Amino acid sequence: QQQVKQSPQSLIVQKGGISIINCAYENTAFDYFPWYQQFPGKGPALLIAIRPDVSEKKEGRFTISFNKSAKQFSLHIMDSQPGDSATYFCAASREGSARQLTFGSGTQLTVLP
Amino acid sequence: NAGVTQTPKFQVLKTGQSMTLQCAQDMNHNSMYWYRQDPGMGLRLIYYSASEGTTDKGEVPNGYNVSRLNKREFSLRLESAAPSQTSVYFCASSVISGGGYGYTFGSGTRLTVV
Image (cartoon, helix red, strand yellow):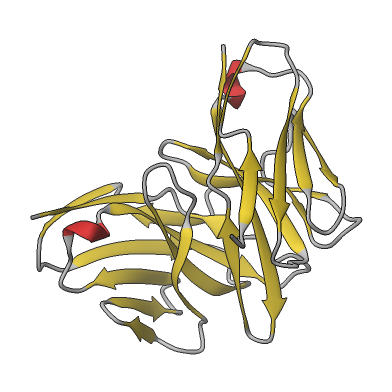
């Protein structure tokens, strides 16, 4: 059972455009929603995260929008750059001793110059 | 450099062989994790250790064992490798403090079982 569903699987955007990646979750106990960025040959790195008590969080060109009632959250990358080309994973976790993360299946973003 | 170090980076095994993937972190994190990454499936949790001396199964533990050797080190062992275990394996560590926390991942071990 996939608890965090991510779409699209791949995304191509022109430089300067907006990239949007969506995720939906099933477990209402989740209370922490991070996004990770992964470049080829590297491990994932934390990009931005949100808790369900806010509907939006912005850090530079990256924004998370969160809809608790719909159990959905999304990543928006404004003014997308070729250097943003990477694989993006959404994730979720709930209260627990180790806060294990459950990941979405990933989105491969390509930003064309 | 501070972070999570995984060894080896690449490995080819024959079916039935055993091996241990090593992971060490120098950030004094309490929790450590092993994930596998397969195309189209994201990262799936194999085992985790909330703190030194404890380990627990994740989503896909079959065919694996782990050891939390001390606070720094968390190893993953394949006792009898199978082609289905061909994957990229990531170790991570995290610290939970206050209202926030984050995972730090190693650079991965690419394992091929033939």
